[in-house]
Length: 173
Image 1 (spheres, rainbow, N blue to C red):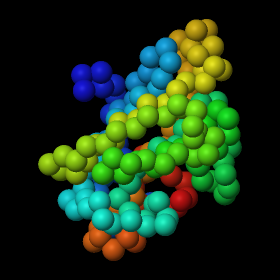
Image 2: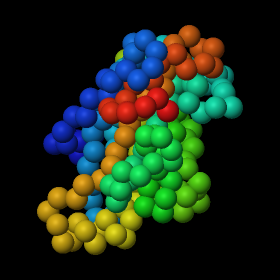
Image 3: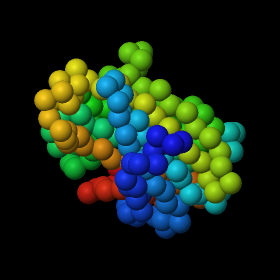
């Protein structure tokens, strides 16, 4: 999309676990009401829609974690799975489905779409900005938010994650 052309590229190429044969790029932008995130995943073997797992991270997926307050607090031991009222996460899958943290469910807080591409898949997510971020944006030229993007890679369609790649991750999730 043209809206992302002026956004800086965020490389998703830090191998956290596994072989790291998949990588990607992300682009972020915002307007008065939403934060938009576009992720382009380069994956030679994208899971077909029949591959499922009880653990969301075991199959091809993108996790987008955000903390609108940039509090640097975590769910535990360095993980960036924020789940407070000002933060949350989303799992997005190449075949079009997504799952969100409980604080986002049912509040029209997140919308997500995916598309298969010649080189893998793309995920586009829209996060409703919190009132506190909107207020800070009215006052400040720049607002710092915590963002983490992680690609989970099932390299052989066995519903077991073989690779985990992130833009930044202090610990394996």
